[in-house]
Length: 183
Image (cartoon, rainbow, N blue to C red; front, side, top):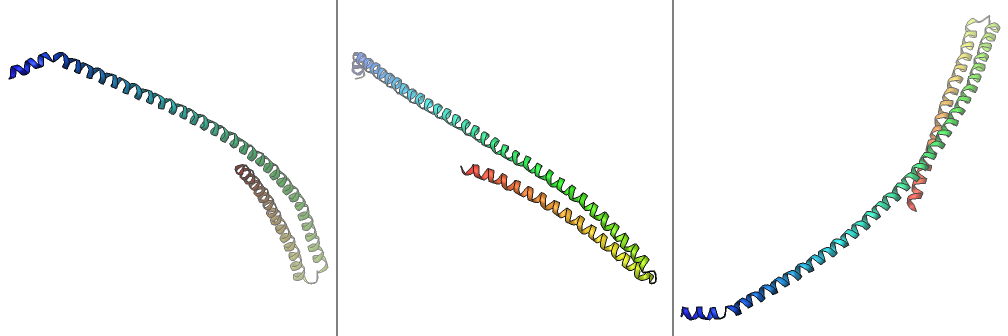
């Protein structure tokens, strides 16, 4: 029986070989077409992703450029405000210097008046020595109190002017930034 099987196999070997060959050709062609389709799809998606990445990179570069322009504009406004504040603070300092000079003149006049008043009280009140010295020291004390009050008022006025100038600068900087960010 084995011999019959071998004889049948040998007589059909051409058919089996043709079948195997046809199956190999069909498998090879199918694999080739599958690989070609896969490669085509892969290449299509790679191209689409590359285009998307290029668009994203361009959009990012554009947003960064716009942000830099906006930052430079804001910094320019802030620098301008700083310059204005610097000028205002210079004017405040000049006003304080003028006020200090005027104050010195008033202090000198107050000292002079206190000395004259004390001298006058000494000459007029020679009969009561304690009374003249007390009144004279009161005039000097009053002149000294006036000088201190005037000096402190000048310091407070200068600080208030500076605070006002800085506050306005801060407000202007905030308004410049807030206005541009709402646009």
